[in-house]
Image (cartoon, rainbow, N blue to C red; front, side, top):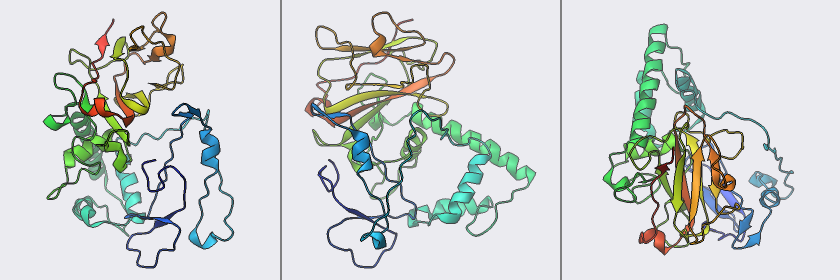
Length: 338
């Protein structure tokens, strides 16, 4: 709905970096500045009161090379439901091995050249083997661990005044600046980009919506009303006032602080959202609970946390409405129950 086809469907043509040829008619061209492209699709089971089948919509997509257009092959789909997969990155020496291997196949954009120059001083260069000695391996392992600590600090202890969503609360804007690329006329916001890419991977322009009923808005919190980290052995309540300003839906998702992945619990449910059958208070407000044990009477409004592990959340508004922007509706902090 936020893309060029406005949710009506269409044909997209992904073009490689520096493509100089003609663009055939009938396509929405996407000019990629990298040689590796991910296509992400998020399906909804309900939209504006209408039931949907997101799997069927997904499988109606066709992905093929342009020269196969007249006779495109069938698109293969792998159903990952019920399967376990670990996508958490290596936080030690292995981080550098992944980086070195990636550099061999990825193109270097102008804005990447300084970073790639730094990598060359560590023995990571395009077209050359990465073979550090034991001394260098130790240094790289320690530096990767230090880098992770710096990233966690920038993410969960942000000093950006622009990042504060509601003054006096622990809620922080995921995108404190005007765009999702953290690029300004004269510089790139390195700390802002570091903070985002520690907690997430991909961006899309509509993720930092400045227009009511369009795109999405995101907020992050890792602390309770007293400023203490959210921890798995305690129970917390998040009170949502009535009429959450999201025309499509809202959600709150729980992630482990240490590895940034969604928590794995016995519920097999790391999130709560407006599409679920939640218990609603008489005044229209909703109380959500997060803790190791289910609070009596609020089974539907509860996410199970892991004792001994700190966690954080992203709150997402899909189709944020005017009360979000003028802040006549606000999130309150997590309140520790026990």
